[in-house]
Image 1 (tube, rainbow, N blue to C red):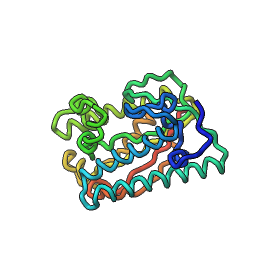
Image 2 (tube, rainbow, N blue to C red):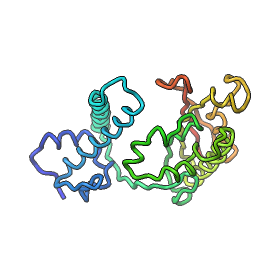
Image 3 (cartoon, helix red, strand yellow):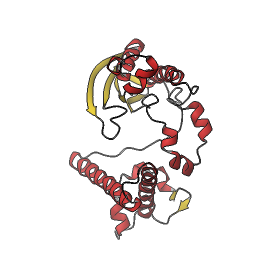
Image 4 (cartoon, one colour):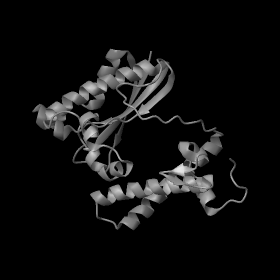
Length: 255
């Protein structure tokens, strides 16, 4: 199926977004809706994503009317899309194909030593109740909240926060082992992680500045598995300073 020669406003908007992010583009089905052309389908998908993002924000904050939230979020999306396309054209980067899979990072359905790079940002312990925080999105996707609460990293465990933290550390060790298994020798695993020091200090019964950061714990675990620590980059976090002020980007190499 080919794009029409006449460019519509929908086509021009869609061109700002990488088409390869939509596996359904060949079936022209987005969220159960059928479309006649690729441009309209991709534009609808982008608008739907912005709507879901807006609905989530609107549930957590009433500082702006939802329509203003939507406009601001959509403009940020488009800014990122245009910036990406400028860089892609300037660097003459060819977009690859995408194989999207839903699974469990603790047990990956991926062959040994078959991955060139890994980039991920795991839950920051129990700093955020991700299921509650994204309740609207999960309901829209038809996700079983009970199953998620019982199995998601950072959520599973009893109501005692100390138990959740212990489960989190066990789960992250499994994730790191899987990353090491599927990564090709010499390639890198990049992790973005922050520490909810104030909350952890209460359950560990130590001062907040004495809490060992999750980035330090993951680095130690990764090195014990066989990764080589390459670099660490700190960056400030805006909006949740009462929970954490910094997050870290860890670069780990599989030897």
